[in-house]
Amino acid sequence: MLEAKINKKLMFFTLDIEFQVNNEILVLWGDSGAGKTTVLQCLAGLEKPSSGIIKLNNNKLYSYKDRIDISTKDRNVGYLFQDYALFPHLTVMQNIMFGIKAKGKAARLLNPAELLRSFGIMHLTSRYPRQLSGGEKQRAALVRALVTQPQLLLLDEPLSALDKKTRINLRKELKELHKQWQIPFILVTHDEEEARFLGDKVINIRKGKAKQMNLQKITSA
Amino acid sequence: MMQLTDWTPIILSVRVALIAVVTVTCLGLPLARLLARRDFLGKDVLEAVITLPMVLPPSVIGYGLLILIGKNGIIGQKLEALGISIVFTWWAAVLAAIVVSFPLMYQSARAAFKSVDVNYEKAARTLGAGELKIFFAITLPLAMPGIISGVVLSFARAMGEFGATLMVAGNIPGQTQTIPLAIYFAVDSGDEATARTLVAIITVFSFMVIYWVNRWAKRQNY
Image 1 (tube, rainbow over the protein chains, first blue to last red):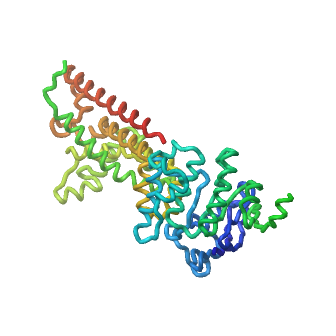
Image 2 (tube, chains in turn blue, purple; image 1 turned 90 degrees about the horizontal axis):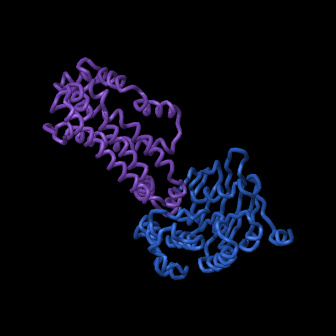
Image 3 (spheres, rainbow over the protein chains, first blue to last red; image 1 turned 30 degrees about the vertical axis):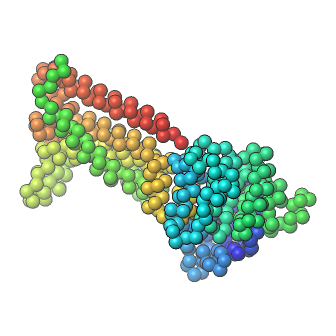
């Protein structure tokens, strides 16, 4: 379970958000520039909140009061970047092995081959990112993030770079994936329909102000 | 036409340029990495100082170096007391080459580091990598084309250094006479054959290096 209360002063407004997520999908929905990505970056430790607390399965990742700020590499949080951020000079396999090597043998890690097979990209392991389609890139980036067994997965606009057909397929896959993994997913999107389809919980962010949405209400909107 | 009685200018030039480039790379890369992603008070001033030797006349650099390492210079005096004299040795030529080629290395490396998308570094961090691993496995390889071009430019600049070298190292054949100096004094003394040969050698060599680097950089496009 993830509990977070984040307050961060940004250039034009203050981001203020509080939520609790069990093993479900929380969607942060809002226009670009509303502060959604900043929330993910704070959770991952890539940015520092001005104040607040972040607790993942009873481990404090960040606490303003206790002056705790666990570094990103030790947070065990998976992050799927908007453009996937696959390392362009490494093959798919090398990209995936990067996390395994970085975490070392101590970590309980998955067998990459099994994960690659389940994502249907076993045949792409020796390709470079530039030789992949958008959907293939996303699968490779997901495998890379998941192979280190994160306790939380953050997804920044995971579908926006894809064409409509791929988007609808991958949307279902993401939901399926979440059922298998049983960890909290936090997904950022500007797309209302996507928020409705994927979110167990939806929080609307507008200029840093967060408002939990009733799913029914979005459906009718 | 292609007859050269004295090969020492070539050997000396290559030796001076190699030492200068290694030094400039070892100093320039960490500094460029540090300044590419960090802002602090006085950074603009520091960057202007670093770049200055690129635009100053070589004679000004030569004079500045003499003030520092000349026999009565600020550092030179102290070295003299230890029995070390740099001025008018080939080490002075190395020093001049370092000063003039450093800005080129620094500028290229800084631009190269800046061009690496920060998301790659962030992604590496979320995958559990420490900063050292990120630098060597992600940032450095992705910045490599720009760094190599910095190495080549500074090598070329170090090879071609003339004005400051003449002032601090002099023109001692066999000791401090590099290719550019040898060409100048060959022409001055009417030794056309030597001048032509040296000009041909340095032109062909420079062309090959630049041609090879450009081709290599083209293949490194991600």
